[in-house]
Image 1 (cartoon, rainbow over the protein chains, first blue to last red):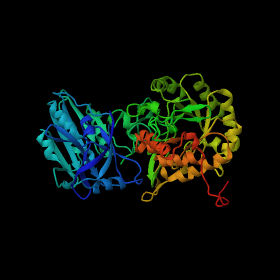
Image 2: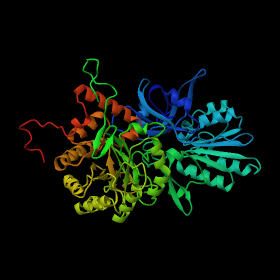
Image 3: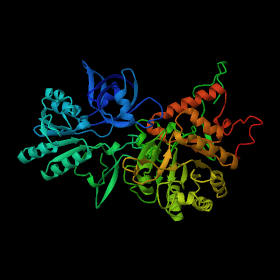
Image 4: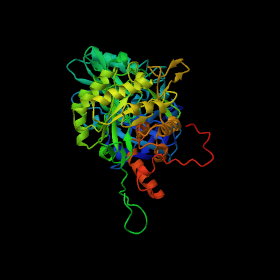
Length: 273
Length: 326
């Protein structure tokens, strides 16, 4: 079931000059959502921007046993994301969802390794909860440019997720990109100890994760974020090239994704960002 | 629609909004526009397809097509430019995989057809004529995004005439060419379609457009050019529907940037017997109930019995019309 809600902004927490977490009163969507699903949102401001933007659902917000809403992890980049950055409590945001195919959590004793770059952290809060509920041992490999770009580690720690952090400037965790520690961990892990990788972040990062997974013969799922028009399968703008015989075949990421098996994605044809 | 029996003079809420487009009888004038509603089935879980006047499915060639590499869309002020490139499953897979579901859901199906050649258009039309569940054929002679076929025909009067008359000969289904606005005088193309035996015309397709990233100095779309849609084009589209309504007797299906019931009413008053809604569906996939409710309210408020009583009922005050283009 898909819901369209004129959701009231409950809270907007600025994490830095560019990042914020916006909490929306959209309980019907939140209650129906599975890890890795997304919503299409747009501030109710008129015709510019015209289209909604896709966002992974970040947190499911609860008040005791009741689901009261959801939050989005936003980075201010363009017009739409700047409006979400500047939104105030009480504003209304059109919110459509939940949409897309979710992550499928593995079962213990298999381990789950989440790999996040920047706002690519967004789909992993709900996945970490689902993994914890299934008692699946999990790790979060989480990289950002600098210390100030890494958020909510305590949320994951509280769920028992093992954290591996990197920053490009070395201000937090190891210096470098997150794929470095991931490669080491994959190399050290005995082949008979199963692990599945879940990745979300910049396209080059996800491509590297896909390459590493293939090299170490592990399954990896990636949550892709192409430009999207409608989120419902209507416009065919969000297509992703997947392997299909000797030539790529375009599939709609809103319906067939946003989560894909990294091995089927034809990375050469994927538009990076 | 019938007057209420309670003496209030108000109309019943279950008002008859039906319209006729030639021989087609539609439940209401609102049709999902081709290219903006997938094959219709994508929306079945959130929209009652039977409650729409019709569903115009994504353009179909004889065979499958991959379309253009992304990025395929870019937003512009109050609009968007697309260059999807008519990705599609081909008419045969449509008939076997999508049409049964559309029939089951009670949709009034307009199948938008494409071709690289006259023969391909005719073959696609023949395939659709042999199956149950197709209400009408909308002929795409106006896609600005593909090299072969389509707009080649739609930008020439003889091409338009040839495609429509060839399809006319191979099908008894209503034939509705979808016209491009990328011509100097759209009304002459409506006339060519009428002379060729079309049952109606739909207009407008998108306006050829481009957007440039000034930092990289590259086009924002892989295809360089695309088609502009959305509210940015609406006033031009309304003008073109108005011009065609002056020029032909054919029923007109109007479209171009309809976001609200007032937008739809502009097209109807300008001369459209029905309207298509495209880009708005991306922003608000649940727009249909709002349009149907809005139309009911409008007719009630203006005490108009039938939608057809509104079609082309533009009132131009006397003495002010000399300068208006005919």
